[in-house]
Length: 366
Image (tube, rainbow, N blue to C red; front, side, top):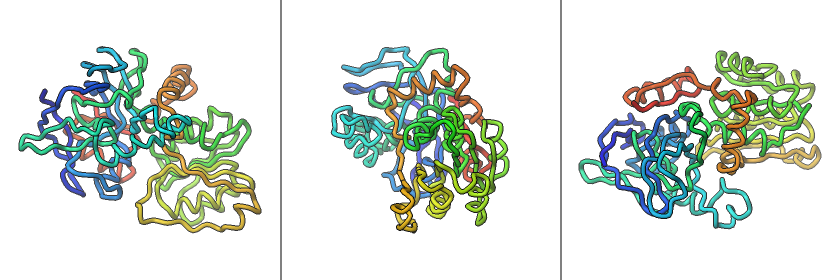
């Protein structure tokens, strides 16, 4: 079938809106009519070359839509509404078997190679070129083919522009707070970086019962938004932020979550963590970046530094959990939405994301 999608052909962009030929779904795969896809810094990192991916590629990894066709042996039915997540967990490798589906080994290999979990590509450009898939999703298209292992069924009355956010921002941010940091009632929490992921972490920290949530960012309007979402304090990012957070929290936060993907900020997040506390990082820095941390206090202060990918979540377990929290009014994810765009506006949307003007925009397909 023919569809339109946003294709990255070279580092630096821009994305080109082009006509594509899309093959039918293979075994275990789904053809999904995409309704909404979020703009995320992980997309930007591919555009600017911080994350090396094979090109050309149809971008977009945080999406929701409706199943319109199923391949043989698919686990879904036509008409199902689904959230798409960016790790197609095979369910059989040793990581999946141990409950760590975010680290699925075949899924990681497929994402690296720009294929579906089957190893196949389903796109064709008019000149015969076969574009790659982005993290098994490629949501910046009117229709996409995905592995069924990338999909989670959601209620049909859940607005799909909100549902899209559960595929990345909510899983990554809320999961980092609930699972990786294990925020407990009464704890003090700081979140560095207030994009969609960071604000989802703020929401989850509040839901988990943190008595103090410090929202840190260089952009003032993001800090103010965090306060409306439940943060108790805000702190401007910069050279004085560690002292400020430690002062606000009486010696450091019990749990600190860094979402920026900036090595220097991770060092600040670690320095702002209390004795006996945990620092969690979910951002994706450039592969060449390193961090320098004092080694002694890892032992002497029983400190913990943890990485968190996809919020350490299992999408088919956690998307329904987080949707239930949203529907109960305890995880107001719709507060993260800062704009809805048409596919033709996608480059302007990424410019706003890069500048810090926008938090979480979604492309809504016409």
